[in-house]
Image 1 (tube, helix red, strand yellow):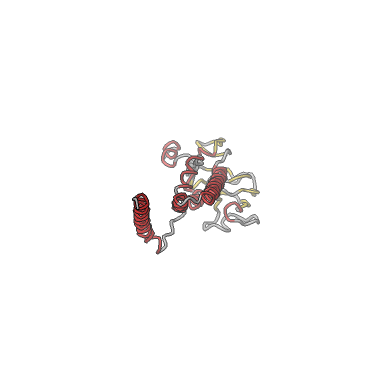
Image 2 (tube, one colour; image 1 turned 90 degrees about the vertical axis):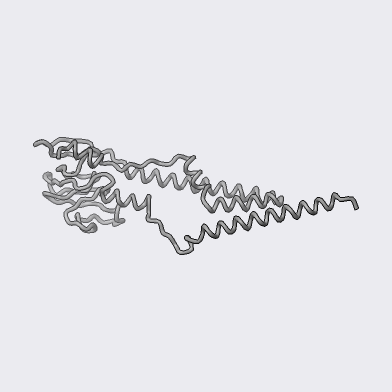
Length: 236
């Protein structure tokens, strides 16, 4: 398989991710069940003319929503900065060593190991290297490849090569883009497995019963108020 065919199959050595806009972040924040429940309570307070409490509570809820959205967007920008890599790599192609953008790497490329960020998952073919894996494992001490990850002689995307043993250290690209260890870790952060608790399955029924009860109480209250108003207007 040629490099062009492999590139079309594996795609660019990038992790696609876009930061949400403020409009999308605020929409998702204020459309949660928690905020919808709060706003329904505030509507009841307005109905009973509790203006002072309602104004303060709505103001606090809006400030809280904007704060949560800003924290979410800041986290997304931080993740995007981790995904972006503007580095080059030396590869052995067509019998010669050339320098290319790391985004153009494909599985099977023979890459020269140099000090700096590891562009993709690599399997050491010759030489050795000392890596800083703190960005993925949290370890503060440099380790040799394979110390924390399952395969020996593996350089993982997202780590940093602190020192190559010599100037003739080479490795083969095994995974690129979202298929790297870094990509899979970021997928777990962005899209964690959904935890479904036992009571979550009954929430829809509970919400339905609460809505029916609220409508019944509202209709009954309006009828009682109308009946009292009609009696007050009836001449004695």
